[in-house]
Structure formats: C-alpha cells, structure tokens
Image (cartoon, rainbow, N blue to C red):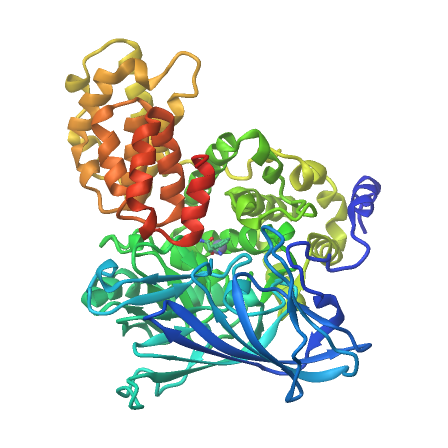
Length: 634
Ligand code: BES
Ligand code: ZN
C-alpha cells in the first residue's frame, strides 16, 4: 500500500482505534449505539426567550453502563429509562469550553429508551432570539440556531460528537412558521394556528442518520417560494422576490451537476432559509434546509457559490462526516473541492482555477493573521487533545489547504478523468458514517493501487502535519485573474513612479469586472502592502484619489467587494473609512466580515473599534460576540 516513508509516518500517527476518539465531547458515546430514530421535540417560548424540549433516544450497549451526555447551560428537569423515573441524574460542574456532562446512572439495561426533559437558558450559545425590531419586516420575533461545531449541547442533551449519527422524528411548537433539519410535513406551511393557545406544531422527518451538530431550528415570520423543482427558498415575506431571484437560476443546475460528480441527491428536497443579518456564517449546511446569510442577496447572483458549497455538503459532511473536529478538513476541504468542480463544470475550468486563486489568497491572509497561539491551527490534521475550543480552531485552513490537497491528488494520479471515479467510491464507502484522515488515506491508496508510486510523491508530512502554507500550489490557469493583476500592477507602478493618478485611472477600469474579479483586484491591492518597498499609508493621497475614482465600490451591494474595499482603504489608514466600516459592522453579523473588520479597526484605532463593538454587541449572535471579544481582548 503506502510507500515505506509514508507508512512510517502514518503508522506513527495512526490512532489506536479508528475512527479516532473525539476529544471535544465529554460524553461516553463510545459505549453506545443508537438503534432507532431519535424523537426530538422543541417548544419555543418567545416571551421567556427559551426553548423547552423532550428528547428520546433508543440506546444499546455491550454492558450496562451509566450514560454521560453533553449539555451546556441547559436545565434538565426529568430523566426516564424505559418509562421509569431516574431521579438521581446529575449535571456535573462545567469544564470550559466543553460544557457540563449529564450523568445518568444505569445498572440494569443494555437496550433501552432514554427520555429527557430539558430547557435552554439565557446563556444558550446555539440559539439567538431576535426581537421583532431586529428583523427586516418587524412583524414578529425570530429565533434561529447554529450548532456546529459544539453548540448542539446547549440546545439538547446529546452525544455531541460528529462520530455519532441518528435518524430523527422531529417536531416543534411555535406561534410562527418553523423549520427544522428534516423533511417538512406537507401540512406545516398550509394551515393556520391549530390550537387555542395560538401555537402550531410543525413536523419533520429525518430518515438519514445525522450527527447532533446538524440539528437546526428556526422560527419567525417566514414564507417560501420555489427556486427549482425540488427546492424552495424561505425568508421573511418582504424579501421573498429578491431571494427567489438570487437562487432560482442556479439551484437545479447545481444539484444536477453535483449528482453527476458524486451520485444522486439522497435527501429528497434541498431548501435554503435566508436569515436575518445576525446569522454568523455565510451558510450552514443544515440537512434539507441550508441556513444562509442575507449578504448573499446582492441582486447580481454572484454569491451563489455559497449555495453550491452548502449543497455539496449534502455529500461531504452530511452523508460522509468527519469523526471529530480534528479532521474537519474532510468536511470542508472536500466541500470546497466539490463546490469548485460544480462551478468548473458549469462555467468552465478557468472559473474553477479563478475560485482557487481567491481561496489561496484567503489562505495566505488567514495564516498571516494567525497570532502565535493560533499557528497550531494551521495544520491540516489538527490536535485538539488538550480539549481546546473548536471555535478557536476555525480558519480558512481546513477549507483551502484541504481542497488544495484534493486538487493536488487529482493531478498526481493523472487528472480529472482518472480521479473522478474515486469520488463516488469514497462517498459510497463512508456514507452514513464518520471517518478520520487515516481511513481516507487507506481508501485512497486502495483505490489507486496502480498509482501508489505517484501518490508517494506527495509530501504528506507537510500537507497533513506542518503548519503554514501547503508545499504545492495545484492550479495554474490565471486567465480570469490577469486583468485584475494588471490593473493592480498599474497602480503600483504609477504610484512608485510618482505619476498622476487622475490622468492614469478611470471609473471604467473596473466597470466590466465581475464581483469576483473585483475581489481579486482588491486583494492584490492589499497584498502590495507586503512588499518591502510599499506601504499604503505612505501613499494616502493616492489612496484618497482612488476612493473618488472607484467610488462605485463604496456603494457595492456585494459584501465580499465592499468589505475588501474597506480593507484597502483602512490598510492605508484613510480615516474617511473608519466610521464607514464601523457603521457597516452594525449591519452584518457574518463572522467572516465582523471578526476581521473589528481586528482591522482595532489595529488603526482601538478606541473606535471598542466603541462600535459595544454599540452593536447585543445584536450579534452569541458565538460571534464571544469570538470578537476574544479577538479584541475584551
Ligand atoms: N459548515 C460551514 C459553517 C461552519 C463551520 C459553522 C464551522 C460552524 C463551524 C459552512 O459550510 C461554511 O463553510 N460556510 C462558509 C461559506 C463557504 C462558501 C466557504 C461561510 O460561512 O463563509
Ligand atoms: Zn462548509
């Protein structure tokens, strides 16, 4: 199989059990298997801003064993085993950052039903409640969850590890339309409230086994519209037309392209919910209903790559799952790889390379921005055995190093035509399961047994275990990026030569750029600052001239473009932009902008950064608030 060098390397790292034990759970999940659909019920109370619920697991173990589940800031009120009350359960003290284990004694049963009643508290990290004023339509309050990576435990007692999967029968009660991560009962969105309390019950079936981090809940003034034969978009009624427009052109073609690359979509429906602005991610691949940031709705259909990404998770992540967050690249690296293959198949291979260029820039910037304590997170396979917070480990590394590795493997084995049969093979081998990097490598080498010597040319040690940039850049086609590089170069040479800005540059320079070309142009401008002879702050007057010539960027509705425009201007300490960025940070909740936005403002004007953070913190999602606090040392 492996060449000797790789064999020595891998065998020295390979864990004793496979898949590797997840260090980010306090549960004793290894003792149990889930034998039947878990029933999960949530009751949403907008007045107290809590969710109470009941969960019932069907469990089996070799020997009778106490059950330890993850919880975090939950109140557990009742536990039953096979219908019998278990009064002596205990919630142990918190162990930061992993929460408080719930210990349930059990001396008798090896096959049993475990039923738990619980309620969330104000400290719940998974759920954000919004007052109606914080929504777009201001008609009703709103609630949404975000469980990945380890916040499911603050919503429901569970084996909160991606290594454990279960099918579900889900329901929730709410006065407002509600969604969960399953197939919605057709009656859900049809009737009026069906009991005298004004509450309605919504039912969802999840017949495919999923890990706890994919449990999701949202409720509010939500309506839906079709965006394809098996897809809907959900959002607040006033945005329904713009949301439908944004996605309807691409949705089904993404699905069909992904199906050709891997195998047919197994989840039946693919829907997307566009959330209020405080949603902390671009998208979250909750099964059957991707949650998405409203920053995607830019009116130009140029952010649909996020939908391609979340859709690709239907195979990578949701069918085939990393067994712990140490192997997160198996989720995200594969997903970015598939996302770009989808785009490449639809729009041409240059588009794929172009996205990879943007990703490579993000990776360079992401690694450069990591402080000394975070450098450990720039390896592909991570080490979380010190029980660190997986939210702290989050970066572009699993995404971009991971997808670059897969791209590199594709080339090493002989290109797409040779690599492609491996894709369905891998996803079929591991679907409904969770795996680690070692199982991936075993499967790769077994599949390409005739190309083992080619695979052995890969510098695995650097790819898998060394911090920093990957050893090989797998893409070469810069045709779509060249115009962007050329324009940025022209700025550099004009400024260095001391020539006139207004005589050289015009608004029309950027008029034909797609949003992504503007992204690359602006990234390249920022990167000039890395040259030894060039600091934007030494060229403030030229930067101010640029801000007039390209003033359309200041009005961009595309958050990727607008954010980078602010970065260019603020890197050069153009003070005119400090408040523009500060105010903008009050209108977006996506951590991709909020965290680096505050970090940048903090670098040039800490007082202002702290002021804006305090002004807006109550509107941010709890995870986002906590991360920015860490970033700003507050
Ligand atoms: N699964 C992630 C979001 C996530 C990761 C949430 C880790 C919590 C912990 C999702 O699929 C994702 O990667 N979203 C990206 C968009 C994508 C196009 C790279 C994002 O939010 O920016
Ligand atoms: Zn993802």
